[in-house]
Length: 417
Image (cartoon, rainbow, N blue to C red):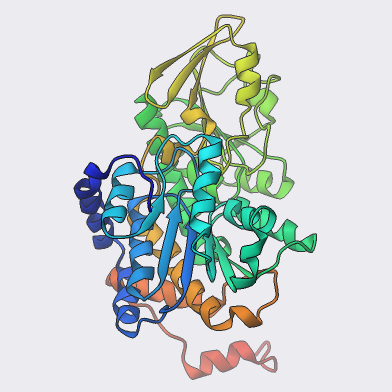
C-alpha cells in the first residue's frame, strides 16, 4: 500500500508526467520497443530516486517493459507531491512526500525493499547501504543495481574497496551522456532556478562563489556568468582549480571568498565546505545554496549555533542573524536547492540520463548474475547509442568515418609523408 501526501493531486501530476514524456524522446522510443517484448517481465525493481515528473517517465517505462516497481524519494525535500499522486493513481507502489523526517525517509526506503527486489536503482546509495546493513536477508535475491549520482558512486566504490558490496552496480552517473550533460547543463540551470525561485534575486553584477569545479560546478559557473555574475571558484583539487582559472574565473580560498561573495553555491560532494570560520566574514544579505547530494556542504549546525535569531522569510529561504548583525540566508535547509526549491533538471537532459538507467537495467537483467560485486562502467557503445538517438530526435545528422579513416586510426605504419 503506497503512502503519499495528497491523492487529490493525481490529475495535476499526470499532466506534468505527460509534459515530461513529450520532452523525452529517447526514453519514449525505448519504451515503445520494450513494451511490446516485455523485456523486464518477472523482474522486481526497488528504486530510490527523486520523485519528479522525469523520474515518473522512467518508472512507467520500467512497468511498460513488464517490471514490478516500488519507489521512494532519495531526498526528504525533493518529492513533487502531485507527481507522487499521479504515479499512485497509475498503480505504482510509492512511498514519498515532501518534508520527510529522517525517520520517515528511511522508513520509505525499507517499504520499497519489501518488494524483495531482483534489481535496485539508487541515487546517493542510501537504499543500497540500507539493504547491506539493516535488511541483509534481501541480498540473496538481488542480481544488480544502478547508481545515478556522483556521491553515490563514491560511496559504493568505497564499499567495494572494503569488500562490503555484495552485488554489481552500474555507475550510470559516469556515462558521458549523463555526467557531461545532466551534471553540467542540468545542474547549472536547475540550481540557479532554485536560487531564483527562493529569492527572486538578480544575478547580474553579483559575486557568485561556486565551491567545487567538477562537472556540476562547471555548469553552475557557466550559467551564473551567462546571467551577468562575476564568478569566483574555490577548489581543493589543483587541476580543477587550474581549469577554472583557464576558463576565465577567479580562483581563491573559501576564507578569502567568504568576504566578497553575494551568493554561494556548493557542489563539492564533501562536507564542511562553509563553516563557522566563514560565516562571520560574510556580507549582510549573503545567500547560501547547496547543489551537492547531501545537506552537509555548508554547516547549518554551525550557523544555527552562532545565530542570534532566525526566521523563514520565503518558502525554502531562512534568515539567520549573526552576532555582528549581518543577515545570512540559507536556502532549502541546505538540501539540493534545484529540487527542494525548484523542479530539478529539465526533461530534455534527463532523457539521456534515464535512457542510460533503462539500458543499464536491461544489461543487469541479462548479465547481473555473472558480474562481479563491484562498480561497473557503462560501455562506450551504450553512450554512443544514446547520443545518436538524441541527435536523431533533434533532427541532426553527423558524418561517419570511411573505411580508410578507420584503418588509418587503427594502424601504426603511416607516418610523416
